[in-house]
Image (cartoon, rainbow, N blue to C red; front, side, top):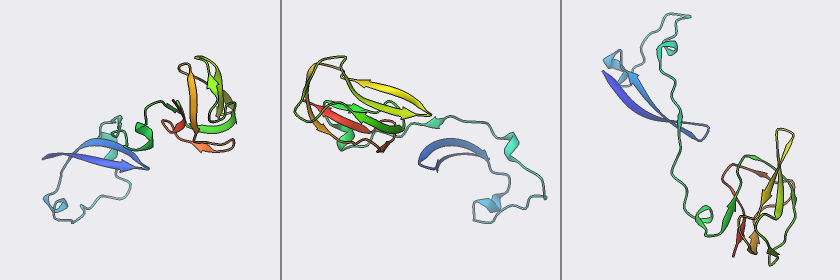
Length: 130
C-alpha cells in the first residue's frame, strides 16, 4: 500500500510517497529491520516543497526582500532617504562573497528592517520603499 506524506525537516517541507510494508505501522508498531539493512536506498529523492508565503511583514507592498541567506555587511541608506532605481542600498555577504542589493525603483525608503551584522534568511524583508 502506498501513502503520500508531508514531512518537515529543519523548517523545509517535503512531500514523499512511502510504501507501507507492514500493516502494524499504521497502528503505531515499528517493523523489525535486520541490523545493517536499509530500506532508504530504494526511496525516491524528492525536491523540497516551497511553503506558502507567510502573511504579515513579508507581504508588505514595496518590501525589498533578501535574495539569499547571509549576513548584512552594510546599509547605505536611511529611512526617509530618496533613492534612484539601480542605486546600491545594501551589501550582504554569503560564503565569503558580497552581494549588492540595488533599489528596484525610484522612491523613498520608508523603513530599514535590518542592521549591519544581522543574519538574514532568503526572502526576509530588508527594507520597505514608499
